[in-house]
Length: 323
Image (tube, rainbow, N blue to C red; front, side, top):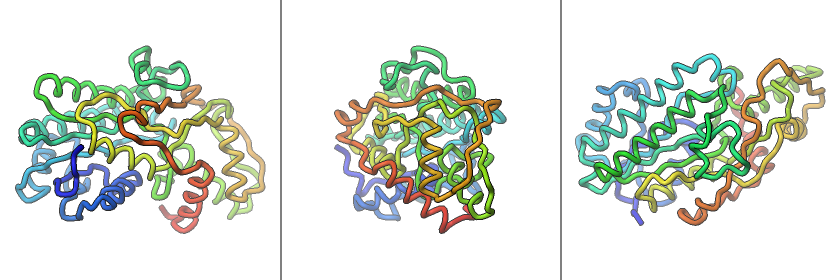
């Protein structure tokens, strides 16, 4: 097991909603702020090689980097994926490509350092048997609306596997299910389903609207994981994993989008009707993960109940509506 306390750790995406939870998990373990560096886009464009080279040199003023936790991604809901397939493939592939190569080039192997890559369940085939098991990840093509993003993230895993074989780079690869929680992206154009629904319901309630309109038919099902639980799994992987065996992070439950909408409507107190737009896509038919591998290899299991997590997220959004 790696003691992270005195390691110099880069957390890409550390300013995002999952990143905030990861930073909190590191702090709970005694990692000081001086040992954590969060690159900001205004200073480091991670899709560009020269900028990533600069990051490794400047993060700790010339001192070597011991661990990289790569959370940063360009991603959104179904609509955003349909509008940006090329950008989402390029950006996510380029970030992983440069960050992993520069970890090797700057001597992380010789120092026994680690690279933690957060992937996506969008990498799974469209009709993966439920619950999704890690050994199924190559058995088909991903759901079309988010395939470019999913394939880019899966390619990052293969790069880590190749670097482990050739260069002995220590790494881990995690497949978190759909995440939600405080500090999430609530922009209706680019957000995922839970923050989008929370915002729709809260704003409709404030305006006195009689209805909300939701994409698709509501028949698709999803599993959701609270950001603090995901962060604990990620940090745990940094401590105990040395190879990129893919590991699902999930809460081991499944809910239809129809039931999800009705639950959020109830928790927000919106009293209007729900209208479905079947001309819009549902996305992947079902998503639910098997998490036995995470329990076995990480000693990790989700702790926050779904309704409790939604309440915390709604409360945070009401206090931060401009976010």
